[in-house]
Image (tube, rainbow, N blue to C red; front, side, top):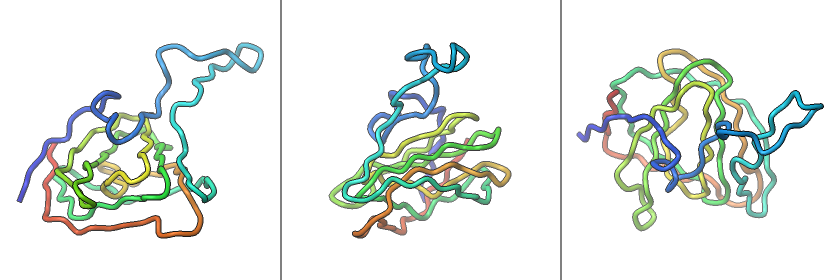
Length: 159
């Protein structure tokens, strides 16, 4: 069994897999009579020939250490996850190696931050920590096979 340590997430460390969904250091512009900061185009929705859809996912929690035994990917579209609650959560990703997941990495995503996974990025299932959580999810709906799941030897994620 492999053990990996979840590390704090950063834009640079997560860049091979997608973008962070968090406000920039300064807004792109002020809108709504100067009362609202617009942090514009934080990520791109990849949807191929499908439609972009918005859903809410409600997920049961895990605690660390956590054994990850399944990775999935969506080859036809990106998938964005934005937590709707106040808690940190876990994002597990892996590089592609000849159509299979490579060595997983785990990131602790702080409260108020989401991620946008690029099309084809291997990732673990939605993983809130310690209590159930709701996530706003933006992904692709349409024709074609847009879900691949792979069972992997257990990878234990520690904090």
